[in-house]
Length: 182
Image (cartoon, rainbow, N blue to C red; front, side):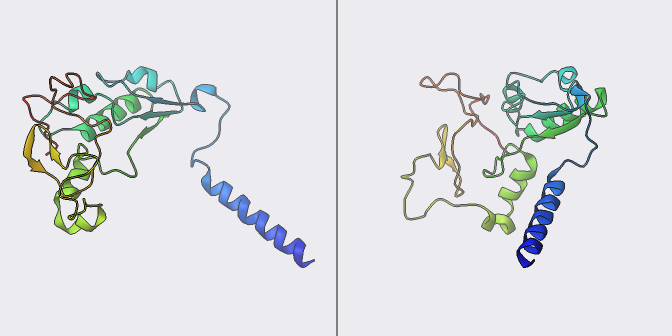
């Protein structure tokens, strides 16, 4: 009897956890409203009409990268909001998500950049080791400006860069020989 009670309680807890994991909106058999698209057009805007054809449209942070990487300061977050609003305007029933990296603090998002620049949040972020003296697997300073450095750990994966002869077409080209995250 005790085992049956424990199993019943465990099953009830698992069922409650499953229910909590479900989306807050009602299920539907309408395929256009029960499907998801995760889209990215790094050269410009994703087509909001296409996103509005799905139940969930999720936009990647690299969306319109060619445009936001050239801005001073970079305005990725604001452009993603505009992309989401344009999709939602076409279909108010579409749930619109914006992909944000949970692990890396990407400074081209204004809200993240503000935290990186605010000393009261310094403890939230990993720092380069002061004992390594710049011998890291990624540069702590901007290649185009050795005086522009960060004490915070960062990688260069999918990071906008100033084009160079060695890398004339980086993943997101900054303009005027400067990458301005703010």
